Image 1 (tube, rainbow, N blue to C red):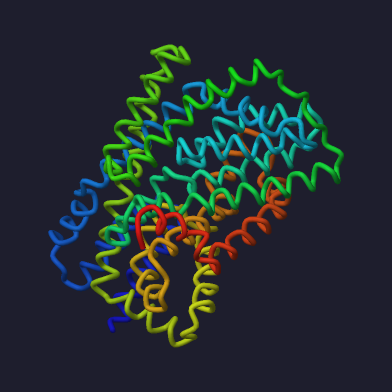
Image 2: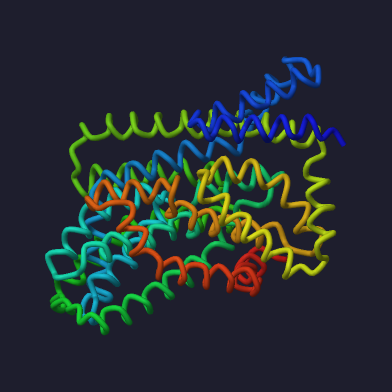
Length: 429
């Protein structure tokens, strides 16, 4: 066991992160420093960088990103808000419930928490304030509901997990996230109703029947994007990459020919997609080099030994891993954490009989909570900018939502059937 090299790898990464070097560069630099110490040829690190992004499965990520950008900038957010209003607007606290449901629908199309907050939050937060909802509560519920975006398929973070886990079925991961995503939505709906009764928040006026039919028809055209992706993958008609490409074409047609969005917007959509893609691919490449160094130093094997020495009970192991991921999620973004921790933790959970699909959903929900926690949560800061509220105020307002989300996390962790029922039913065990 080369403890010096392990300390150098992890210590240099931690130091670079603390001094606010971007995560991508911190991963790459710490890998190069450790390789130099071990006299590993630089060519091997370069090869691991290239190998990290030289994967056909990765082609689905740019397509999912582009489809999400088309949808988030193409006016579908308005349609989804109207659709959710038809379903739950007349209930007490209906506008808060609309916020939950529109995020559920939007998450099933875009797969991006930040896109959800940016597109829906800019509309829902002012609307809720006008109706008498407290500002901090309006922003908090927007952040909390956006966590569904990484659970309900499609989610490019699940594709990243699939790659980090050595090729776990994307279709099974997508199906595995469906019931947990809806469970989170149901828990948030119940909580919003309780708060509405307690604070006497209003109900909305019922939508006339004829108008409701038109709204439902227009919204379902956009929601059908998720049906194309999920249906194509689980039926075996399309691969994840093919379904993502078809979803881009469909979203383009609906956005620019049905919703009549000006075509000039497409230039900005492409620019934003390329910016996001550049960050994601660079991160995956450097994470792969870092992961290669971890494997070379046998860190996953040592981690397995340490955790199993604490307890061989899978429920205790899962509790420890949940606490670890929640803490890490507070200080690092989702994608690098998936790439770094999956090779370390997956051997541990498989050793105690946890299915990789089940563990993937546990990890994604843990890190989704991390997106809305200080000091690094990207969703938290986007919401603060849109809602014009301080991080301190928002964090305080989010405390009840943290409790709800952690309760759902524990349910998903200790009731595997919530995750595994659909994958086993539709794709075999």
